[in-house]
Length: 280
Ligand SMILES: NC(=O)c1ccc[n+]([C@@H]2O[C@H](COP(=O)([O-])OP(=O)(O)OC[C@H]3O[C@@H](n4cnc5c(N)ncnc54)[C@H](OP(=O)(O)O)[C@@H]3O)[C@@H](O)[C@H]2O)c1
Image (cartoon, rainbow, N blue to C red):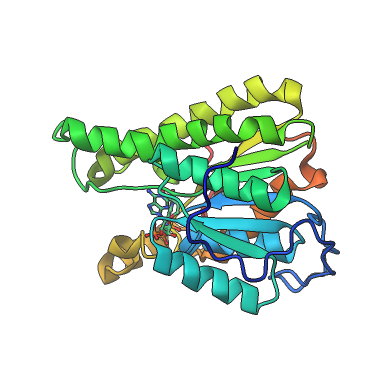
C-alpha cells in the first residue's frame, strides 16, 4: 500500500504518455532520446539540479523534481510545465526517511517505475576546518551528501530493475582539490567518488550504471560565497582554463548523455565539468 501523497505539483505530468520531439537547451533536436523513461532528480528546484531536470525533460523523460521547500517545488514545477515539459514536483528533504519514501511512492504512483536517479541535493553548512567540526555537523553533512543517495537508491532499486537504468551522483572538484575552508564537505564529496565505484560494481549485474558528475565552480546560490567575491573571482578566472565560471546548464547535457543508451557501456566513472583539466 503506497503512503498518502503529500501536497505535490502534478499539473502537467502525463503518466507514461508518449512525448513529442523536444528541442534541447543546445538547440539540437535530440528526438526525445529519453522518451518514455522516468527520472527522479533530488535537489532540483534550483541551480545544477534544476538545469539537469529541465534537460532530461527536454530530452523526453518524465521528471520528478524535489527539494525541501514546498514553495520552491511549486515555483520550479510551474516554470518547467509552462515550457511544456512533463514534470511533477514533490517535497523531499533527502536526509529524512519519510520524505524519501514519499518521493518513491509518488513517482511510482504516477509512472509505475523509475529509470534514472540523479542525486543533486547537497549541503555545506560549515565553512571551516575538519578538526574543528562538531559531531552534529559531521552527521548532517555525511547524512545528506553521502548516506542519502545510497539510502534513496536502495528504496528505488526494486522499481529500477529490468529497466536498464542509470544513476548519477553529484560530487565536486573539492574531492580532487580539497579547499581549506570546506572541511568535511571535501571529505563527503570524496566519499561520493568511492560510493560511485562501489555502487557501479554492485549494480552492474542488474544492468544499472552508476556514474558521478564532478562540477567545478558553477554559478548558483550554493557557490555565491565564491562567485560573489570579486577578488576571488579574478583569481578563479585566471586559474580556470576556460576563463569563466560555469553555468548550471554546463552540467546538464552530460547527465542526459549518461542516462541515454549512448552511454550504455559507461559505468563507475567520475566526469568533471570544471573548465579545467581535473586529471591529477
Ligand atoms: N555550485 C557549485 O559551484 C558546485 C560545485 C561542485 C559541486 N556542487 C554540488 O552540486 C549540487 C547542487 O548544488 P547547486 O550549486 O546547484 O546548489 P543550489 O543552487 O543552492 O541548489 C540546491 C538545491 O538543492 C535543494 N536542497 C538543499 N538541501 C536539500 C536537502 N537536504 N534535500 C533536498 N533538497 C535540498 C535546494 O532547494 P530547497 O532549499 O527547497 O531544499 C535547491 O533546489 C550540490 O550537491 C553541490 O555540492 C556545486
